[in-house]
Amino acid sequence: MTIETYHGEEIVLALGFFDGVHLGHRALLEETKKIGQRFGFKTGVMTFKEHPLELIFPNYTPWLITSNEEKESMIRNYGVDFVFMNPFTETLMKLTPEKFITDYLLKKYNVKVIVVGFNYNFGYKGAGTTRTLNELGKKYGFEVEILPPFVINTHSVSSTFIRELISCGQVDEVKTFLGRNYALSGTVVKGKGLGHQFGIPTANIKLSKKLILPSTGVYYTQVYYKGKCLNGLTNLGFNPTFEKHPFTIETYIYDFDEDIYNQVITIEFMEKIRDEIKFESIDDLITQIKMDIDTIRKRFIE
View 1 (cartoon, rainbow, N blue to C red):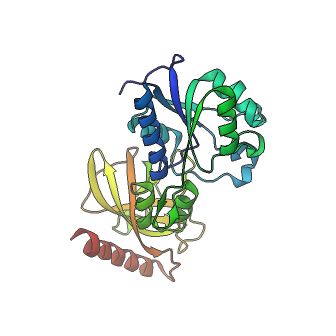
View 2: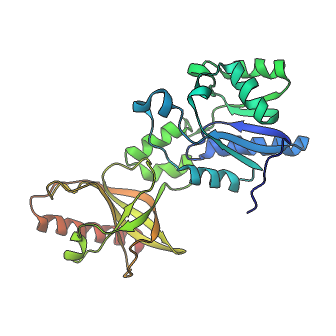
View 3: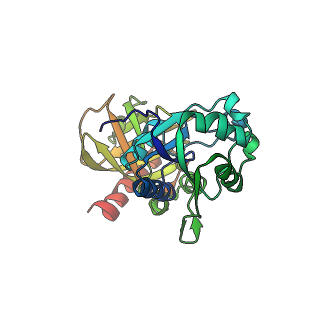
């Protein structure tokens, strides 16, 4: 895929953070493309590398659904011409809504149309609203397109709502709003070797980014490795049966026996099987894991 370089072309620009690139975001991108095609303008997305709360209220910064690399790739694959992934700085944070438009946006881009969601805020302390944006559009000569809430099953689709589903372990509901199953990619690293020791080898992954995780417990997953889709049982948690056991993401891969240390795999979460349990003995733990393996095989594989 060729990545174009922006040289000041007339552009329809979608604004937002776009975490997850969910179905609501896709509606925004679709509208951006339609407007671009109608007027013969280029299309783009302007977003930030850092969630604004990292600078404003660090303790309230959400764990994200997608890394910057994933987000940019997904947006590009959806067919816009440009993705501008800009740093969110203190200088930018302090700009009034009008200064954000005049001293930042219009200086960087030859904006003809701005496309945003109904709840878009901008400028210092989020003082700028869609109404402000409309007023500034009239003042400075650009059009504004505001999309209404994107509703599915009475829920307004948002990154916040999807994060709640993931963190509560309701991964089987995520696809309805995200447009795909929630997935994590990571490098397979050596763990404590307990799985091998008990005849249930697992692949432990290390994430390279701070991303939101499903609640602790056991999940039916699909594992993607070198173009293959494999069935898996993934356990997230601290394994409380063992004292001071670190938090791990470990996956038993069905009908698979390859050395994949230092390889990158993607784990797609399909359904939660059970919560994390503290067992009285290691034997009880092993018995339960074997039951979980059989449960998933009978329910999803055979």
